[in-house]
Length: 172
Image 1 (cartoon, rainbow, N blue to C red):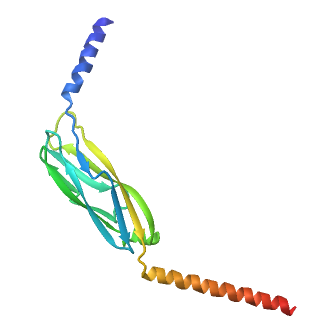
Image 2 (cartoon, rainbow, N blue to C red):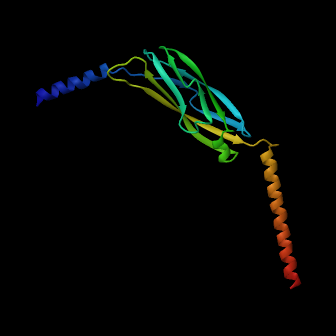
């Protein structure tokens, strides 16, 4: 029994020495966009490779792929290297227009890195950056004007209906 436990313990102790851990550093830790009236906005995300390895990174949204874009989406960084990635949001995309203008959407931006060199054990690193998109209507927006017309028309129709019913009841 001891003869099998000792090699197993030696194997467990030696195992971490053979796996090369990777990592990444990303800032800021969250992205909040304020977009007015179906417009566009962008912010910069900084990705740093703190490892000793050359790493390949990918940046992509978990949802709303047609509205949230990363540029570049994929890139390579040397050890200690850094890259500025432009994250743009376009809420005039069909997805956002279909669901209506205004409101808040939330998702994550995934940043994933893996070593460029092949090894027996490939260990990657990743981060999820929360993204919030607040879609507001401009004060003079055509949508606001249309909503005002619809609400005013509904109020006039409701008043006319009420007065018509009141007149019918008093005539009886």
